[in-house]
Image (cartoon, rainbow over all chains, first blue to last red):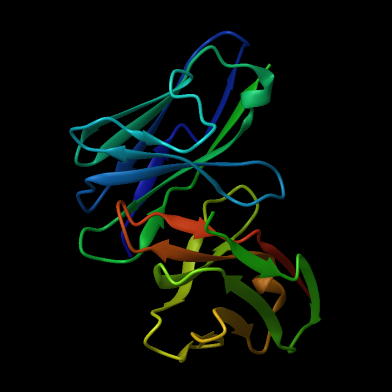
Length: 115
Length: 113
């Protein structure tokens, strides 16, 4: 199957700072990538759709100024959590579909802890 | 709003038994129904998937049954093993726009040795 990587796998930051999470499709090009957030023992919540060459599309209730998404190339999307607060602590997961296929391939996730 | 309802929330099965997880969706604007397996601290991994023109798909010990008229689909894990202990999510892919997934709420499966 296709491979999607995320970096870093874990990050701890202080309240008020910003954190950038990278999502890369390693063996295919992805014009679209998805960013999810998952709280403990809960389902995946779609935050936004990252589109190469255009602005991201955010789900209702997600603050676009707080969660900045940049789809820099056909293999890289980044999520920046700005002015992080403890309530932003969560597991962030990205995914990408291969063009022309139904499957979404998920990254291994990034555990963000804001102290 | 589109929803996918999943049950049960948790499931305990003896080794060698059959694990059954059910999902139901509310509208017909979906064209692909995958199941994902997730271990703690890991990203979801695709287990098996089905399209709505097929009523059943089997891959090894895993089977999806799909009932289009009832808008329901289920995952059956035969000969369940302790290594199957994980959280399982069903999902449905939308047919328009960016084809995003709607996920079920998840089922935590524990297989007793």
